[in-house]
Amino acid sequence: MAGHLRGSIMSGVLRPGDFIRLDETAVELGVSVTPVREALLTLRGEGMVESAPNRGYRVSPLTRGDIDDIFWLQGQIAVELALRAVDRATPADLECLSELSERLRRLVVAPEGVTPDIERIADAEFDFHRELNRIADSPKLAWFLNTAARTIPYRLYARDAEWGMLAIRSHTKLIEAIAAQDHSEVITQTLVQFEDAAARLVAHRERAGVDSPPG
Image 1 (spheres, rainbow, N blue to C red):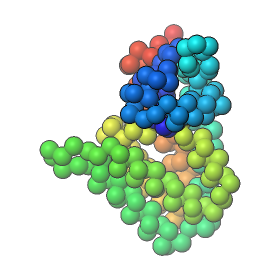
Image 2 (image 1 turned 45 degrees about the vertical axis):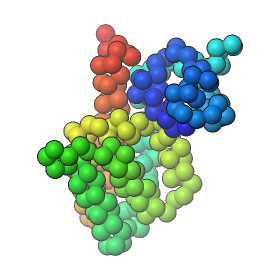
Image 3 (image 1 turned 90 degrees about the horizontal axis):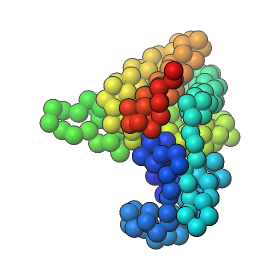
């Protein structure tokens, strides 16, 4: 529930200043008020919503700087995990990463006339990075990354075929860099996805009229 609302806030479906009322949201999502209340309390703790007396909760401001900070932090943690994976990855690990990337490719490049499965694309991308983090063998650091990554609206990206192709190319180059122990390229390919994701989210919010372009 928190993930659904978080994604709606990040993607601009719920805009800064919008009110989120418990009863209305529960009816809309087909659940009781309790999970909605718990989700909003979680989001309040994250600074994504604020209490609005007698009106439920209000979506907090989210600036371009906030978005940049969110993805910058994730990128820094992800780089450290990827570099640790370089020293630990076995041929079997690299084969597993390749298989996961190929699964994503098959989902993104759907046959003509077949609608891409957004949920499976989002899951496939998550599974690739989860495996990479497992190889890094740094569970506490991976926990911090997973916590920060909750803000990523994966389903928004999963609808974007261009994003999907970039992710696949980046995965391929990253796997090759890990195999070659090319630390510089590992850093580059890790950061490129986070930088691209930030830019795409900003552009999406501007197109949707949530935010205004700078200047």
